[in-house]
Structure formats: C-alpha cells, structure tokens
Amino acid sequence: MELLASETLLRYWSAAQWQANVLMLMHLLGAMLLGLLLGYERAYHGRAAGMRTYALVCMASCAVTILVGYPLQWFGGPSGGATIPPFIDPTRVIQGVVTGIGFLCAGVIMREGLNISGLTTAASLWAASAIGIVLGLGFYFAAITLTLLCASMMMWGAKLEARLPSHPAIAVTLRGEPQRRFEQRELAEFAERLGYRFAPGSLSIESVGGCEEWRFVCTAQRNYGGQTLTRFSSQLGSLAGVAQYRVAHARN
Image 1 (cartoon, rainbow, N blue to C red):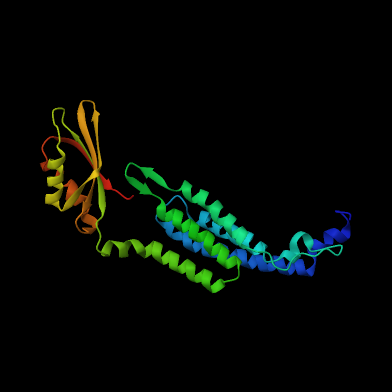
Image 2 (image 1 turned 180 degrees about the vertical axis):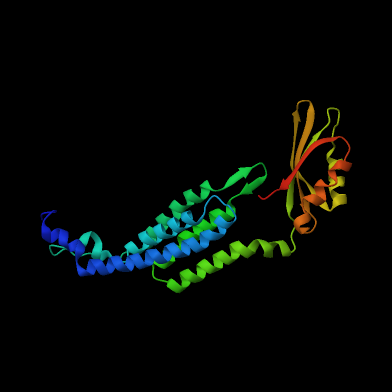
C-alpha cells in the first residue's frame, strides 16, 4: 500500500471521517465551556490554576476519552480488508488520564510550616479531568451536573463549613526575650483560658540568637468564625516575656 497515494490520503477526508471529527469537536467545545466555568471560581479568588488550566485539563481528558469511541475512524479508517474491533475498552485510557492528572495536582499543593494550601485546587483539577472523561463517554447531563455541583461546592462550601460546629486549628510561633524561658504548662493554661486546647504532639522548641522560639498548634474549643486568629493573638501581649509572635491557620 502506498502511504502517500491519493486513495490513502482521501480516506482521511471521507464523509465518515468528517462526521466523527464534528462530533469530537462538539464534545471538545462542551468540555472547554465546562472547564472554563469550573475554573472561573479559582481565577476569581486569585489561585494559581485558573480558567485556562481547567479548560485545558477538561478538554484533554475529553479528547483522549472520546478517541476510543471511534475506532473505525482511526488512521483514516480500515483499508485492504483490515478490520478494527468495534469496541475498545476505555478504562485503560481513563486510568492513564487520572494517573497523569495526579502529577499536575501535586504541583499545586504547597506546604509552609504547619499550613498546607492548594488541596482544594488539586481536588478540583482532578474533578475537571473527571468531567472531561464523563463528557467524552457521552454522559452530557451527568457532566453538566457534576460541573455545577463542583462549582457550587468551591464557591459556597467554605461558607457552609464556617457555619458548622468545628474545632479549627491555629499554628502559633512565640519568640521570647533573651532571658525568657517558657514552660509547656504555662502555655497550655494560657491557651485554655482563651478557649483553645494546646496540642503537645505539635510542639517544637528552637534557640534563635539566644532566644527561645516555641512552635505549637492549638485547637479551638468551638468555631469562633472570623475571630479564630484574633481571639488568640490579641491576648498574646498579656503573656510576659514575648518579644515576637506569629499566628496562622494550621490546615493539615
């Protein structure tokens, strides 16, 4: 068979090929729109992965999934009496997509001390690949519903979480004056008075320039909403011998 023969090349422009390409294009456009919708929430809040990233992930997942649905159109369609199985198992492609997306998701997870950020972005990127897969398999209503559910959770999930009973954690760093020596019992009682529980397993002590620096985590005894940090930090001035301090959310 001549690979560059006219009859071989024309097979790529047959009516069946055009129909398959149009159907794939419609799927890809739908995946792009759903990816943009899901990524808008991340872009609105200034996250590293924005609309373009989500659209690309969703479209790429859709493309490699829908590709296995048209084996009769592969390489211009069968020729010379060759036959292609009418059904190809898509689960291997799906497995490859999900595995590959895992590397991308790992890149947006950042850790700084006791605070871990990027988990929601990583999970939503994984969801974007799932949307592309579901759409590529032809479950249009399910893909649209999944997009709306994911977008709703990303937009309003934090507000719902803030209203529910919980015990949020804060990471505290205290640096004492040169002659100041903190005691664990003293800090635990101080936190207890403010409505927090001292977590002994999180404690680390370091000497910095002759000054003690204590790092530990406290969990709030109830959900104080927007006052979780300020309730604690505003009282640190009453603790004798504190030269510097840092209080941050401990999401781990």
